[in-house]
Amino acid sequence: MRSLSMSVLQGNGFAAEIIRSAKRKTAAIKIQKGKAFVIVPDRLAMSAIESLVAKKSRWIKEKLAIQNEIIAIKPKEFISGEAFSYLGKDHALKVESGLYPVIKLHQDVLVVSVRDKSVDNGAVIKQLLIKWYKRQAESELKDKTEKFSSVIGVNPSSITIKTFKSRWGSCSITGGIQYNWKIIIAPDRIVNYVVIHELCHILHHNHSPAFWKAVERYCPDYRDCSVWLKLNGGRLEI
Image 1: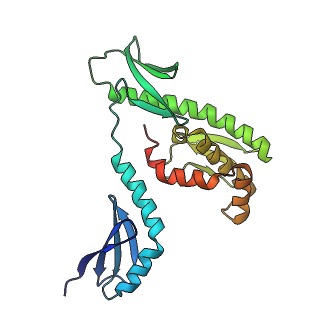
Image 2: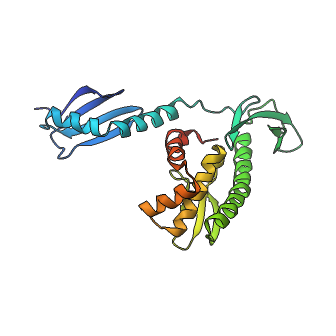
Image 3: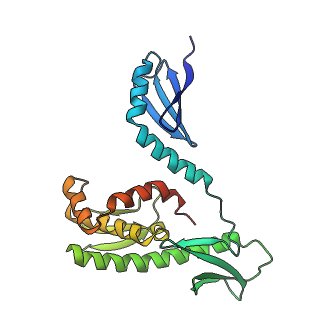
């Protein structure tokens, strides 16, 4: 008897590959490379598998949408004419020759100076952009944190800009706030949501109903903002 067998189950708007394994004792759903896989014990009834997939249908579609959008993202070339988002607004990149590498925002255009335009400056321009975004993030996020802190009535012990792989912010038990600088690429209302979310953790160090009630008080559309991040977070890259 083979240890693995596969078939396909048509879900609500997606197809899921069923992988039966004699070694599995429980069922699991995995999303990899834009595809859904349901890994189940060899003898699990099809009706139970269909019930599991139906129950997790929304979760599966959200994960598929996120991965498919990430896969579809075209890598940047860091050349004139490319668009880079800041607070949700696209700014065209313009590469010029200059005495030394520098970047500035001028009339909604990100102007980058490089020593020699005739060579590939992609790596240099990318690092200049990252440094520029981090500077903007530090200034903008600190301003927003101070603004919403006074509204919410909390006092964070510190505000730090970091690079995270899978989160947009964090709040320590002592009230220290950390933000992922990449959130500054998102629309302004999404940035506000992340700031409010972390500040509300000073009031409630959990994700209890009381916490979400506090978030909703200062960000009534927080559910929409959360969904936006789930669907578009993978695009917040330089």
